Image (cartoon, rainbow, N blue to C red; front, top):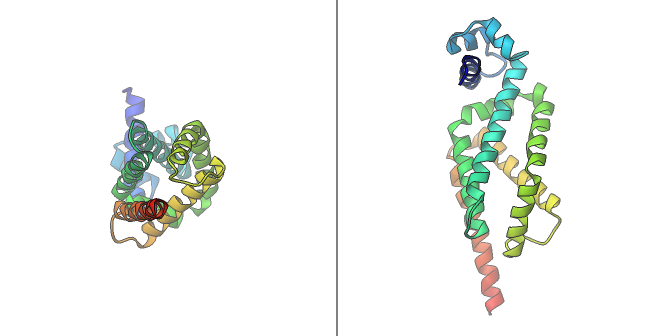
Length: 198
């Protein structure tokens, strides 16, 4: 890794830590620079502003969650099992950064439009992959035969709502909520199969 990239990585790690500890509004670029072991001018060489720093961290987190998700979705086996493993891996990722997630939910109002845009870009980049996976869930009879765009939007709205609620009030790990929801899904499938077999 080049010295420039290494410095940039240190700045991002320090910024994420400071934002999580002090909040986005209270965090000072000077404090981030001190923790990263660089001068303030170095931060501004890499990032236009504190907002840009936050958005870069959010974008990298979106991409890390996407990569985590794809790594667990690919493969053989029941699509529902793969989907559950994917959701659990993303929940574990978020559980590690709950304080930072809380900062995004509570303080990122000024940059929320940009965060939403980053989210849409990542979703669009992965549309072919999500379509293939949704089709696999449909083929197994695990979800209704509705347009993929509607199913994906419903899934993402549910996921965002759960994360938002967990960030503000969750006392237990997000992974526990994921296990509970998949348990309910599996129970509904068992009951449906039992009715079909009678």
